[in-house]
Length: 241
Image (cartoon, one colour):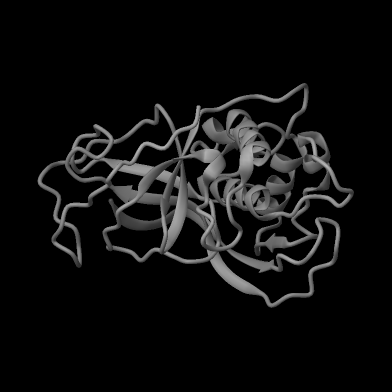
């Protein structure tokens, strides 16, 4: 599949130090990236979608990267085994995957319209950036200390975009407040479920895709700028469920 850029979204500043616990102050180097929806064009027979369809994902890992107009091969993966373990932050595991599913179940359907309860119409750019920030907090934050198995509620209680291994902020106070709201709402009234799949590539940023996703057919044939190639997604089923 071919990467078409991030958007809607917002520029984001972040720090990442995997040695820190979730409540420690992060004095690390400040990095910049764009947080938001990752847009793709799929090729022939990619997951059964019509050639030239648009696909939207959110990113599971900060580092590595993808470039506009470039075509990549991704492998389907169980969401708990995403990102792949050859780079930071490593696989999220079942507990984080369940928390991520709860985030999607509560807020994924509302981000494109930008209409968020309690915030009004913030717009798709702020909503998408806030959602991506919350995703990265879940996939990158370390477990609380204490030993033994950490339950989901304990982990959720430790999440903060201002402290810990991953911290993030934007120039938009509304975006930051919305991202914190997404995190604070997790597990309210019990855990919700959402069926997700990981898309992994050893050298590129791994992605999160909702199963049963919607797509937007585009006119064919599609000429991809800079490549002249149709994107290819090779699926390798490795689900454990």
